[in-house]
Length: 185
Ligand SMILES: [Zn+2]
Image (tube, rainbow, N blue to C red; front, side, top):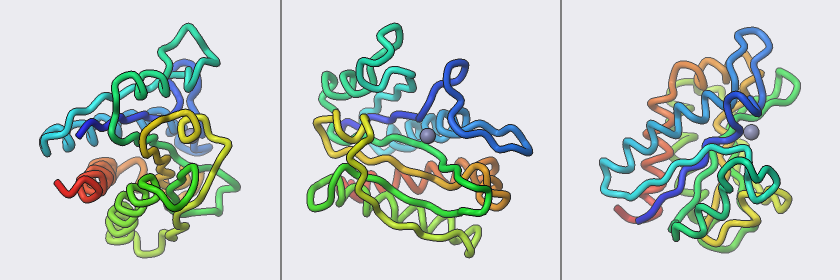
């Protein structure tokens, strides 16, 4: 089982969303969680390739191309890691797929369930925003294998950011477990 991990955004180039109080950056949360997921999945016997890059599919040629790398490597599954941001009040976890009805939805359901269970076991108030279809996201549209984008919480929300800052290990374990649930490992 070959798992491609794409922490969203890129330190030094594109921080993603930033918490207005603490300055916590989406790119750093995604990278930290991605490294932990890599560790847990390798322990479970998976091959893992992790790439965080400002070039999702050809738009920034000076950086490695995320979708092409995953496709050329022959990844079995693709997981992109992000944090949401909106108005400071919105909260919750959501998992995005290109469309419903295929293996990507099954992968999304496995990962989302583990992540929601874990985050709600720490903070029972964090909402489950469910699975959503998004057809305008390069990493979901231009990847050949089942691909999901996990929004682990809202980095601009006072409550979600506590999980994103302090519970990265639990979040990573949950996402890794979701991937192994999908693969029946
Ligand atoms: Zn993002």
